[in-house]
Length: 582
View (tube, rainbow, N blue to C red):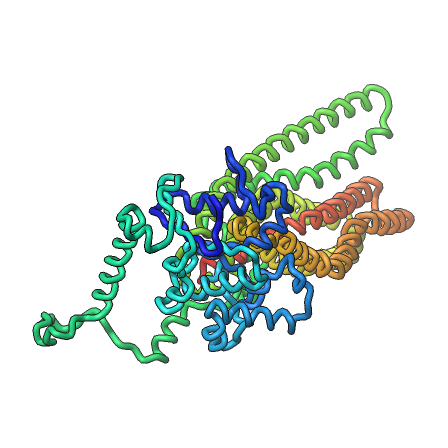
């Protein structure tokens, strides 16, 4: 089969027209035979060169997120004008738009060629998308232009100009993947075969469309049946009133939504899941028991120190007793952490199902204007559905148990130190905990801000990847794989570049929280020895208070190791709450 300068391939659905397009674009190779361009098999040609010189406009054209200018300019990929100045590229864009009869409607738009098209061109009509897609394909002045029913959504005037089937040099009629007729319009019409029947069907369809568009004016208007019932379904609203009604639901973007703190987030999550109340109680009790082991261990070790002053059978008796006490502590910890682990698993499993369903349900009930926002692309929303529930689980799963254990441990050990030596306990607690809490708070604030910004940028990169994968045929036909990869890498680079300074400030605070336990030990040991030198404290009370301070410092350092998971969970929960409140 030799291609003529203008060669249409009419045929019914399933006749193989799109398959021919796929073969010419090398989306797949033929099982037999050879497709050649100027005598050279196309499988021996450079793929990017082939697709730059053989452009395609599909039946359902796909536009990419960005402006009209960006979409048409993407057709310059692989040409000499790819890296030309923007002014020169704009000249070529306007020329292509004029040839595709798109310049007129683009010029009437408020932002002209800088108008955003939305995801997959959702902000434009079908005909406008097809004209822009045609302009994108012809801007590079390709040697071959393939139109896969690319004018189906254009108005009759534009389609008559672009559709030149009747003036074609050669028409090839296909059916079930085979050529059944071939010739000019006149010769095939006179044959009365498959092509003639297709033309007849098309003419009847066109006549039916014309007769259905305009009411027969010969029929008097008084012959038209009128309803005698009053109109109860249509109501005309004042513009200002209707806009108020429609706008009452819009709470603004996520950035303007009130950001809840960790306690407020946990309270709302617990309030939304009354069926998990028993599991939450088990988690709380298990954390109390696990946290109580540390002050108990401080008392136990302080008593053990006194055992070394004994002799004979008494030291053996006391040694056996305290060894059994360690076993009791081990059993208590085993039961507490088993209950904690099982209960947090139940909570995580149920929250995963609940929040994934809640996010999708909240998204599905949004107005269409929600999806027109630049940040609410398909890829970004899918990323939110996938990542946010998991982040909430990091907050409400095992991590929340360990955080509660650390909080109970700090509280119990500080109280224990004050009870056994109020001087030592108050000095260490009041001088160590405030800077620790402030540093931890600052770290969480920096971490939360960084996580929100990083999530926003990563959502944009996810939308680029999703858009490219969903429109892979368009990407491949335009040979813009490297361009898409550059856009994706650019968004990732922005996320990396924007995180350097916040990470530096965050790590200063984190390093302070991890080294604070040695400050607790140093201050506690120095002041404890000072009190001992003046007989203001006993050796036993010193050890209990000092070990309480030591365990308190350890728990304080461990507490902020989970701050990253906490901030991610808080931001994810706030996003879910924002969707629920819309």
